[in-house]
Image 1: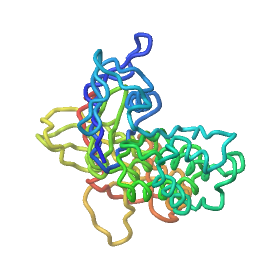
Image 2: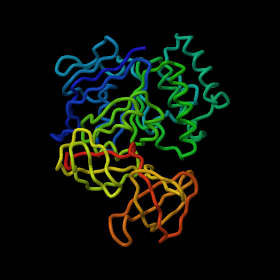
Image 3: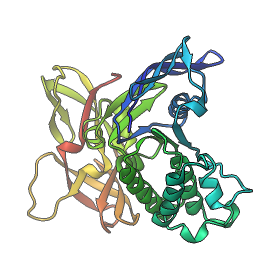
Length: 352
């Protein structure tokens, strides 16, 4: 398989810039996810890779083959050997499942026809080969669209929010099947999503985008644990923002005590970001550093965890959002002693 490289990509629609000097590399046989809010340029980048948008600046390479270079070369989509799975699946309503999957396959490629038969079995679709798209569930349609994109044996697979139309339970099941198939085939894939949990689950490399720029890239765990700014820290769920003061070089004072702030000079005003899951309730006899007494204003279960709204002082201070594992529902008005996990605290100079 081949890797995908996109260098110095910039793009604009009607003089409105949507991509600004974006460079990404997807290693051969790996899955990379473009993560970011709607309108940040993710899908435009995907369409440029597929050849569906003309390249305005930069270059696109698959393996050692240059596919596009601004002003010099722009290989048509059909000649790129790149598979694309659309968000709405775009199945042909007049073709049955097997014909949809085989649509882009040369009739003379007998080994790919055999692959289709095996892939239907692997994706639990063997009993649906003669059915039409309207006779399938959303999850089945998604799997058919995935197999159709893979059937011609493309060098690169591009997926545009492939699970967004599925309910929560089915989404988890289908994306696991999809990842297993990508791993089995050794496929190089670039996927667009705005769901951080999905990006963490699917990707070998996480590419965070905002306002047309690549903000951070790396292994998903590294991006989660070491965000480069407030925007990236806030992508992964509820956070709390406190204003702090660097009382000495590398140390910041907060209502929960002091925290290390590497590279921050004394006197600097900083934003202290604490993830909702970064709190722990202390029980009698527990001791910990970085603690404070809070009052509970609301508490409710949300399945695997409980969400609490807290204030640092009775009737005063900005509310804090905390998430505790399991069912933990203290009465409104009660007081808790809570500790903060320093690994879930991120400190950035204000307005940086």
